Length: 381
Image: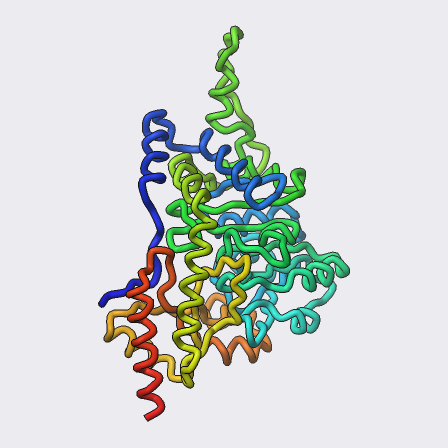
């Protein structure tokens, strides 16, 4: 049996939405993006959302909103995707890598205290694999030190912590809708906040700095008797980026958002099945302390001391695996920022990601569990 690692859950709903966009023949930044932004605000309970072309763009722009002075420091977990730290460098800031919690892989509150100094201006907690950082502890800690909080929610769209949607705890929340994530727009992302004044300017920044996008300029001429030869006019007051979401992506996002809760629940069912299936294994243990109520986990991970042997075993049986992630200071780009992160450097060597997506069948889940048990028994021998 062949079992892939990730698979987007797509169907007729997405196709019908795409057809609507094709009929209008407006594929770029337009009304569907605004509709998706409004729907996202309603879903997570925030005042402002801005659609962009990736989670990486969301993080870059979110940090830029604060206009931090060049060379200021930003606290970042040592284990995360590179985009979290890239956003820091792209804003001419300095990443300070914080060790992670032994159990959750998320940013360590204890090590935050050790790594913080007066040059720090922000912290970016990452809900690693979809497991929430204890935001009720982190946010007061950050606020008492004057730090801004940017939530990296790339792994947890739809998830909540203590009854509050992830992405609404900090000053700004950033989401990824890349192909493999909890929901997808193909590629895409979202910036959201309850501080409208803070992020509203990013609407221009995501559109190369133009103060009025093409759709807005078109709408300004509709239903008016005024003939204006300068309807095309716009201004650029500051440097921007080509980071906008488009209507094609947003149309997929609207369909995906309608099924997000259903997909979250199916992922939780699959994880429950996995956890029950491997509970007696001696050498393969759950990678995270999975709390499935209100969850939106993107990764199902296990920890295996003989990781390479395990990966090869699963590969031979047709089961795809992955590793999420190496500590960022192990990458050449970030080696000069290396610091004391002993937990991160130890635990990542046991991480293995296993198949998790809503359309994973019960038969496939059982097969994966069977392969895990087979490996576990081999190690016992």
